[in-house]
Image (tube, rainbow, N blue to C red; front, side, top):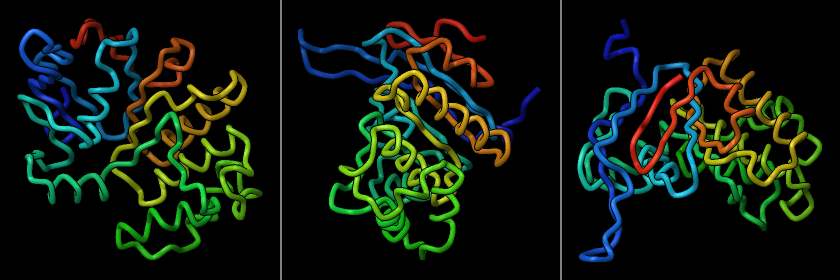
Length: 226
């Protein structure tokens, strides 16, 4: 039986709604989720079920109306300075739209993410680009890369500061099936070889098979595990 110290990320009683009065929409309903250290977890569910809202709350981008999130030994409060600190130091985010800075090349995109965290860039940037198979685009700007290359650079940027948890929101959504499968192989290798904890949203049951565990969501609640 897992102990409290085995978990790196927990959501307990999380509720979230948008709008007011008759326009109020409840998105998450007293949701509980635990993620073990070194686990690769996939979250699946239909559009509108609350997956992305949950990801934003786990990533400390938005706050729950009720309930709380714990990452490592820290229970997250609404204190903006604490949330910013935890997001910068403990969380890596991979967005479906990549969010690379268009005027910077691949290497500088990664190095900039380190500098804003107070980390001096070193050889890790080159090592990550090499391990992800995109060392050849180090000096290219996003407009000079393929979609698949941009996504791999985004993954390298998210991993550069060695986050406790990597959160990936539909990481293969903009990729063709071959590129998506290749990216999943990379994420699985990172999880297996480096012990990287990963929480991923995906609509694809095939890609969810790369995960150790899959959680299914419907209407803002978890409906089953496998």
